[in-house]
Length: 388
Image 1: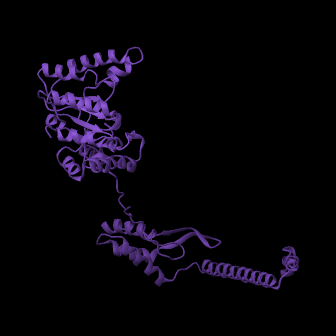
Image 2: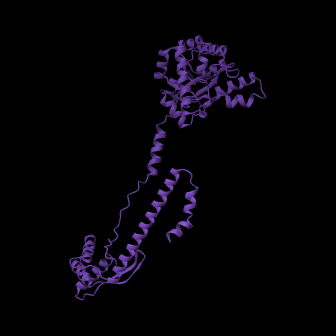
Image 3: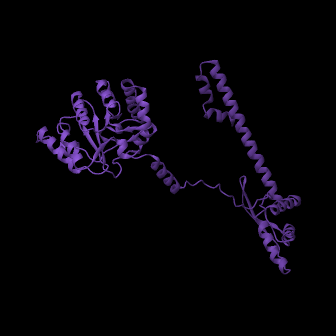
């Protein structure tokens, strides 16, 4: 039989195909191991069948094993004061019926208990017999009654609390300041600083009317004419952060945004000195975002705040309201006249006005300053207008 099996498995042919000794040695070892394992499995299976058949023929359970099974059930089940007695009676009268063995598994078992007819004792006996029946199977093994297993409590995230916390975190981010206190003070602010002659003209007009202003100058521009910015500081104006390269911050990564802000500090320290930078960060730590990009972004605002800045916006400007709509069909002079009217007429208490050093905003600056004064407003730095 074994020879036929080996022949069918082509053991010899596979062995002869091997070339090296090592390969043949491994092959023989593998075949030998598989043969031993197969024989062992067959032997164990055979022993199990014989053992189960013997138990089935006897159809009796050892009395001691039965008692141990009932005791195991009693440890898990709490009976009334009469129940232990009922269980012992069940152990004496119970018999196994309908037990059938298939292979190595017992398919069914039932324990029938005799009836006890003594008042309350009969009721307790029935309870005990039912529970004892659940505690013993046909092989005599004790089956522990099902216990209610407490599932580990799942940690449920309180989404409501999480949302509240998120809202609180958002509130901690200081929002952009668009307007100052409700007073007759207004802030005349200027951005960028590209044209040296225009910057000088602005300084001359402000000096003429004794107006103090806040300049938001690009870091890369500070280096071009440091003497002009030193004059502005000497005349009482504020020079504040407008980033290093005037990049659109919303398109940059967190680190790139930080580099734009801190890069400006490097430039101002080089031009105006460490002492001015320290004073600015302490007394008027203002940052204006290029084009206002990020004025309502918590990400940008939180980075600015972490760098020690308050973001300053505006509530009155000329670029989107006058220049862009008119520059295709009107001359620079016409646009400048319209800008003067727009600023003077729409200026209100606490206004933060945004102008640029360009060919549209500056030509009529003299009229703008005079018109604002005529309306009863005084022009001050951002610090004085916002009161911080």
